[in-house]
Image (cartoon, rainbow, N blue to C red; front, side, top):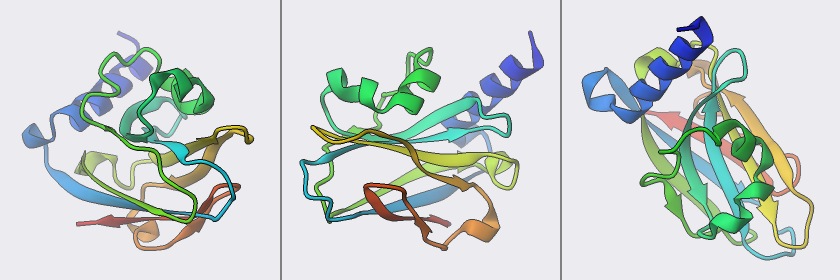
Length: 158
């Protein structure tokens, strides 16, 4: 197996089987702007130090036909047959807050991984990688501004 494939496989296993690895709870809080449109579809996912997809944390928005508008996530995760297992919910309205918690392997923290959120709103411009935050202990608790639909994203490590 190639090294990138092994790295991706190891990260996917660490995300999928946190009980077998030392893990921490990560809580993402995404505050949306009052952008004046319908509910937003959001995809929260991880990439490794080389920008390769490492796993989906959450997808807000229940109609799969619109996932193509979450273009970076959709392109990167298309080969992950389990990308949506237990990680979907309703879209998020303008001015509202999305709060989700996931277990991540300790090995992913301070190891070059990034949290990404793609955003899309019906009849408005898509925003791939609306926010990108390095998954580091130093960034925990520090709000990061979004580009178009997200006022901020904060993550907490427990």
